[in-house]
Image (cartoon, rainbow, N blue to C red; front, side, top):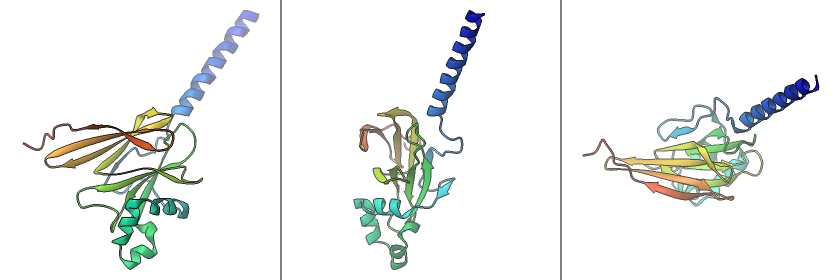
Length: 182
């Protein structure tokens, strides 16, 4: 009787550990992981005042704000669109923020910011320009890796970022051939 109880208890413990591990690594089903400069996020969320302050401290946002009109400057949050993302296995909410209008983007590429800890002391941990941003399933230092794709007719650049405990740092550049360009 005791060995059967021990076996049942062991199986229950293993099953609980497997479920807990899956829960820690799972990301919400509705979470968008690929963002394109030409399309708003699928589940856009407003940019809070604290996140806006963190964004406007970046050199790029300051520069974009200079070329904004008076109406855009008076409501700078309208220059950005954001989507919630989970960079780690924790429940902490992070954001991918895209430059929406005005000076917060370029003609040939979009502007992307990644903000860590959106609800508690938001911190911009990545800025880059590109046509799309993808939050990958692979991770470094517990944070999901990120890929920025920049395409122009004659070239495609893939820029990969790893987290270095404080922010995302460039890890690798790749230049795959553009099949649409002779």
